[in-house]
Image (tube, rainbow, N blue to C red; front, side):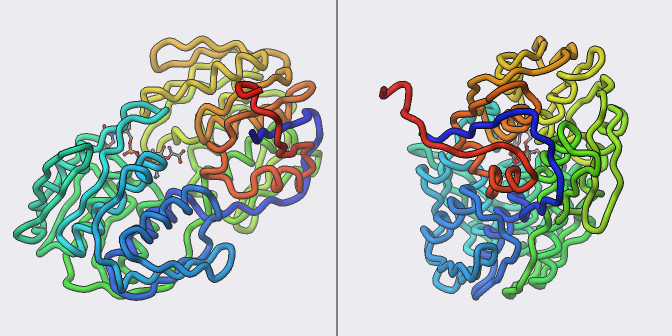
Length: 427
Ligand code: EPU
């Protein structure tokens, strides 16, 4: 099995360039289904989740040419099926993002029910309720959802109970081909939604208000293929910024290739913790903090503090001069990382959806297991500052969303390597 081995205590310096945003690229790939022809996506991250979405698209008849490591040409002319099979949805829940586009193009979709994942139950009831309002009927059998808009999609007003990212995206992608106007109230405002709306508008759609809680979509009868560049990954950027706050040398490290506005609340919390940074061209230069102040954080939909940065920032709280509380409001089961950090010497108590953290003087390297994507990356980052060696296993989680993670850290000066060791279970 592959593990990542990190030797703590090496200072970081230089510049790291983040890849395109996973959570944008996946939805943009799905959105190509709305048109017939060749769409080119640039700045696509070369990560496992993108490969899974590629398989979903190929499975329904799309042709994908890899022009270079970060450029995909997706030809949707021969798409003749509308099914996302269980083996792919089980690997990656975001496969359900094809539901909106398939409904928009064919008026039907057959999607495996995603089930829970290691972040919790992760229902899709809001996707379904919203699409029903647009005239879609749903049946389920044998673990599949059959969605049909027999009379065609009809624009309508949809108020989401919660600003779900996935539901907002599926609704926008269906509504661009509906008859008339759709208004989504309490829509998610994440930058990846704005990126999706930008590409859809380039394709000829009429989406207004993306990035705000009210999105208005005027349906159009046809969309055309375009070339579009995926925005930089704010969460990958935030992960490197935390690494810099812990271990940068006196000159600091520069994290580039993303829009710092997308990390507004994270940067604000870092500042409150005593971390100094300044914005530079296309990114942020960050210095190592001599000490971290305790700060309370709660995860919230954008522009609140992102749940996808909760684990990384918990490392700083674990080393802060005092007690902090981190409250997780988005996912019911996103504190598994905390138990692994405790194995590295952190003092963290979980009470329901709160993590109560008492800062300790230092962390010590240990063998730990990546619980999920962000928690896995955070464990590698914790290893950079821990005394001795940290070995992170189950790193397939990290491969899902971080391109060349160890190579990028090593280029900054970290003593980190991916290596294959015998599986302890198999002996
Ligand atoms: N929810 C429902 N019903 C729904 C939809 C969501 O109850 O119909 C609940 C979920 O169970 C969850 C919460 O609402 O507790 C938030 O879910 P949301 O739909 O907003 O998230 P998502 O679309 O499933 C995306 C990202 C996540 C990111 C969240 C929140 C993708 C592929 N995934 O998930 O990214 O954490 O938004 O920002 O875009 C990651 O990259 O590591 C990751 C988990």
